[in-house]
Image 1 (cartoon, rainbow, N blue to C red):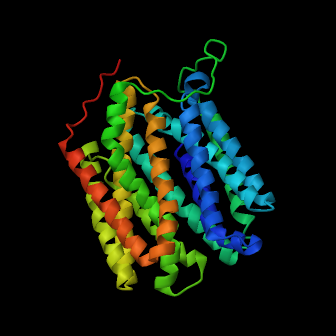
Image 2 (tube, rainbow, N blue to C red):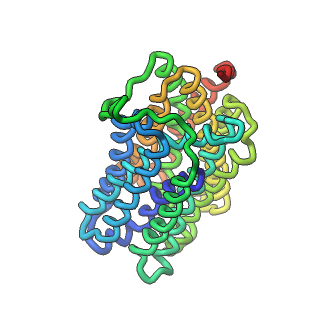
Amino acid sequence: MAGVVFVVMAASSAPSALYGLYQERWHIDAAASTAVYACYAVGAVLTLLFTGNVSESIGAKRVIVLSLGVLGLSFLIFVLALGPWWLGLARLIQGVGVGLLTSSAGPALASLHRDGSRKDAAAVNSAATSMGIALGAVLSGLAVEHAPAPLLTPFLVLAVLSLGGLLAVAAIPAWETTVTPAARPWRPRVIRLKADSWAVLLRIAPLVTASWAVVGLYLALGVGMTSTLLHTDDRAISALVILVVQGSGGLAPALLRRLSDRSASAAGCILLVLGLALSVWGYHSAQAALFFGGAAITGAGFGLCFMGSMSTVTAAARSLQDAAVLPGFFVTAYVAVSLPVVALGIAASHLGVQSAFAWFGLLISLIAIAAAVIALRTPGHRPAPVR
């Protein structure tokens, strides 16, 4: 199950390093590339909003298999793409696949854990997500520089991995009681949260916003800034910053999975602030070591914030018996990771990359400080009794 999360998140980041080739092939500008990225976010958010309840009717296992099938369709469209509109459609469908997976993967990981540990499941989810994003970007960067067919190779590799994930998930024995369609037919509808669920999401909204906005920040500017700092046009080398951010984001929760939700969230926010400060300083002073060191610390902060917030909402979904909490959580996350890309593109065109990076880093830091205060003032979660 963790492998499936890894593959799907790798697929979500793989197109990032390919946009330069698409721009050269079809002479599209940066605004069009931003619009293509926005299609992905729209697909994920709308899917979470309108199908967040689908696993209650057909079961999480079937939803996960469906998400992998949808991703396979997006790979086919990427390979056959004849223009920017095709890319937008492929990213939209890819967002649908990711939205389907993220609403079901968290509960599945917790259910499949031998002790039913939501904390360990959240750590695995965080690590698989971060490492998937990292290696997806690096894979496409290596394909651009070294593969004979750079616009084909990444999607072939991902298609093979997705097929392996599909077979693996299909082989997992049923772990849940599925409501049959005849007894409870499913229909698309906007997720509805209980009042207590809204309180949980509002409490962690600053934490989710700050941590996921960091991902959008580095995905939007990281590769270009690395090229400038290292004076290279090699996209594989330039994508290393994403590997550093997301690699440390995957390592931190794996090493610190025993932290409480409150401690992980607060520590993650502190690392976000420290890492962003070092990265901004390193880029401003043209010191690559500082820039990459700050990126590693920032990534660790993201991993801990993701683990703490994911564990919190999983516990809330159980104790409040409200499955809509998880789709609501990921809606917040995907809005936070997508809007920065648009905002940064506009800011960078007017202020320059250096100023946009500094001002946006400051804004995220302020949100992270507020999130840390909220986390520290929140009483520790008491698990609901197992029945």
